[in-house]
Length: 211
Image 1: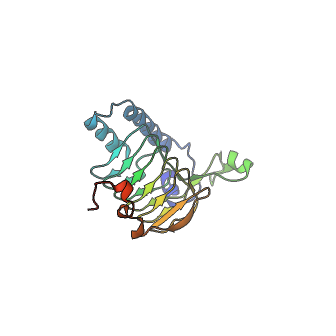
Image 2: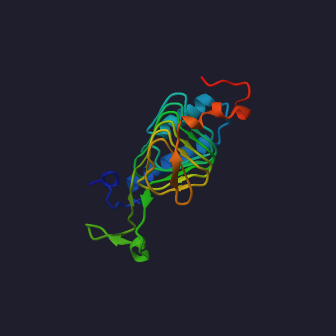
Image 3: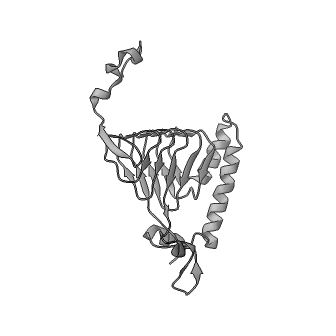
């Protein structure tokens, strides 16, 4: 079984395998290329992102700087906005739905290392070699989600549609759809309902209107 197949199977793999290192090196270099562009170089930025990310929908914008690990393991939907310092450590699959907004310093991580220090240092492969091994769990984020500044989404987490995750949260467990959740660890505080509409905040709505 190839190392990337092991990742998809959710079993231990060697992150130092030559084929994986080549994928990561290419993406890391493209991250640098993207981060060295000016914001108005839209065509250049679009071209670089198309090389980094497995799939990204139309009308999506990522402010930069960015840090994708593989990139090819990530799928992003339409109308995505990612603010400064988006980090996606996508050893395993990462999916992000349509119409999502991420604040500054959002981090998504998928790899998991052994808890015991000796095992973290090295284990023996089926071929009898001693190697540093880890495994990874996919992250899935639904559509119409807003992740506040400095949110960290941990391996194996699914966030349902229409969720708001408060700034600074560390999401260690699944969050059901239509939830406002926050904290370390992140917990559901309440459901998001029609009572959250801006029409009930006229002092903020001012002379604007709900569509």
